[in-house]
Length: 508
Image (cartoon, rainbow, N blue to C red; front, side, top):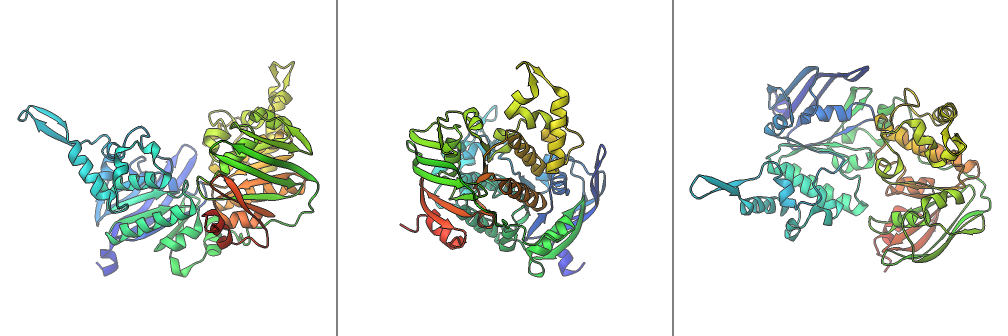
């Protein structure tokens, strides 16, 4: 055994997994070394999720071999994975919001202490608290948060509690699936420091992310998956973002964040003196035909609250919204649709689509009156025809328009939501985190669709935590801090440093 082999903690060889009609993984071989961050990247559908679910015990492999510390093992359930030292933090939060950090960490495996001799037992709350506090102090100096329901804590602390939960079962490998999805830029940096701390303690991390820039700050090696196979594993120093993208999609995608110059027309949307007591203060902005206006800010700055207020999803204390020079009283999203405004929300599964309904039902739901007769009878043939046209136009990958949306990839779900709003014939589209959780190839397609909309005379407002995305697409950028706009940058003036300065309150 070589010195390098001695450092291999987990080794996968020839892993294959089939689902009905789909070969999800084909002959995948991969190793994870002690104390390293191994990044796992690939487009949606490349096989990343299937692979980590096999390691987590949620799926069983059809063939191939898994070795842990050189010994062949079978992972037939999550308990097997935990006993082998493998713990997973999935993209969707897994904490019970009404429970405290301590209760979450020991949920389902509570420590007990004997009472009245050995005849009775009770939960050993003191021991659970002390063990949780010991691990939590590795990340934060104080532990007063441990007695609060996790719903009262911010996204970063929730992520740390999930890490503590993983460490509490003595994990030697922690799998993190899109761990920064709900975090602001400065919170991501803090999380990266925590991950480096895990490395120092000899814990290995398998890091799954669509944010390629993060990988070069964090990963030791990067493994690329495409079409169910791992096509390459490279040292971070031996590659760059363009090469990774090419390996992921099998084609070149250079300069993939750029807005072509579009002649700007008349003013389409003007928001004036918008206020929501305790949340938003004196919000003023406008957008013209052919223009993309970005809204930047840290988590909690009021970006999402602003766009929700504009479309009537949240109440306002005062202010006006005008479309094409006409003021509208927008008290609900239905009023916004009538005014010609559509919102693609941040949480597409919760607010953007009804994922248990079909593609065709989702596309037509916001303007259902256009596919019914006598206000009662649905014209199913017309609905199918319209949906099919949008599927073809937007390149939505689905076997048919009657497929449930929950079976589509994140990028295709986003396209369905975009099709829904395009069907309403909007004048203004508002995108809140338009590419969150979707792969690089799907991002390019979404960018192209946004470009097509503004070339046709539409106006776009875009909220994004990804500054390169915001700067690449926007003609102007408003920066928010503590519920108000604090600066406006032209495309030429906007830099990551300038935006971050104002977003963090450094200008004060």
